[in-house]
Structures are given as structure tokens and as C-alpha cells.
Image (cartoon, rainbow, N blue to C red; front, side, top):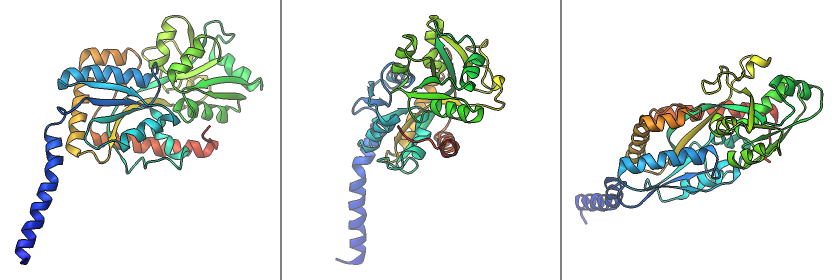
Length: 324
């Protein structure tokens, strides 16, 4: 075959090979339901955020968006499921702040966080609340600190090993020379169940998952982990006010896709979620649970998550934190 003919034959083959992908991209999201994979159990903040988004996205797109919980390994199992799924834009991971910590805690993860994942959007951030059961002996955060400084061992539960609730307390213990024991739970739902039942003296979780139990008077808030007080809990002091200047640790939620998903679909999903976050009812639901909406471009999400990975890798190293 002549060189020119070979060139055009090869070009034709490439064009044919591209047709299925183009067709899949062009008819998105009409071929099948979109799946939001919540990487933590039902009842926690990731699950709740996923369901709020799914309902609104279903209305916007005119096609079904479902939520499926795939839990374990601080979100790694659910995220890996999405990374390994067909890269057609129908599977997304809804993740918590553990996503930015896992690379430094789990060197043998089944995916490369930076290479195999395309950040779609950061939904928002929120303070975390240090709370205690209503019948607890602790009436203030100062009493907790005094007990822990007195080497009487204060037990606290977090939403999981390696989450920001865990790392924030690890920083606090190190800086304050405190005697505290960490009990990791598998998500906010299980933690709240034990907290309201009085099985764990302190809980550390986002405003989103804690506030309903504060409102029902089953938990008493003692402090928030951000540098400024939360608008949702204006009477609750910050950790910084309790003798730890500049202490600031925020929970966050994001949506991720496989890096193999066509960029135009990732951008479209980003646009749809941004649109959903601007719906007054959705914004009210999230703000009512203490989440400050972030949104923005895929590039902004990428930059934010990269910063989180770097920031918390240093904390993990300084505190010699190991996966449990």
C-alpha cells in the first residue's frame, strides 16, 4: 500500500476508534443512571450531602441520580470503586476530608490520588465540633483540658482514623501535652449513635453531623475547631480561645471522578453541581448544617485538594500517626 493510502487508512481507523467515546460523551447523561458513591456509611455527613445533591441533580438533568454507599478504609474502598469503574461519566465518589490524608497514611493504596483521580468540585467546608453527651460531667472545654492535663486520660471518638477530626485532636494533644485516647468510628453516623447513647465521653465531628443532636439536647457542644466561631453555634467557643492560638481545622466534602473520564463530562458535572449549590433550598440545607459552600471550577478543586494533601501529610509525619 502506498504511504499516502496507509496514512489515510490509519486516520480512518483512529476516527472509527474515537466514535464510541464521542457518542458516549455526546449523549451523557441519557444512557443510564448516574451513581454518586458515598464513601462513608448511611447517617453520616457524606451520605447526607450525597442525597441532597442526588435529588437536585435528578431534577436538573432529567435523569436519575442514585446514591450508593461503599465504605471502608477511610474512603479508599469507595474511591477505588469509582476509579476502577468504566470511565463513562456515570460514577462519582463523594468524599470527606480523609481523601486529603489517606496518601500519607496508606502508601499502598490501590490508586494514585494525584494521577488516577479528577477532582470535580469541592462542595464546601465546615467547622468540627467537640461535643459531649448531655449527662456528661464535662460542662466546658476547659474542664476537658484540665482533666487531660491532669493525666486522667480523656477518651474521644472521631469519624475515622486519619480523618481531620482525628488529626485535629492529635495536634491538640501534642501541643497541649494532654492525656487522651482516640477511638475511631466508621463514619459520623456510628459515632453519633454511640455519642448520644453516652458510650463515648467526647465526639469530634463536623457541625453537619453533630448539630441535629445538639438541637435535640442530646449532645452538649464544648468547642469548635476553627479559628472563628461558627455562625450556626455562635455561643460555642473555639479551641483557639481555649489557649491554642491559630488552631484551625475544617472538615470538607468533595466530588471526584476517574481521571480517565472525558474532560468535557467532568466539566459538565462541575457545572451541574455548581448550579445545584446555588439553588436556595439546597444552599439552605447545607448552610443549616454548618457547611460554607465553596464550589468553583475543577481547577480550584484540584488546587484545594493538593493543598490539603500537603498540609496534612506534615501533621501525620510530625505526630507519627499510623493507620489503625
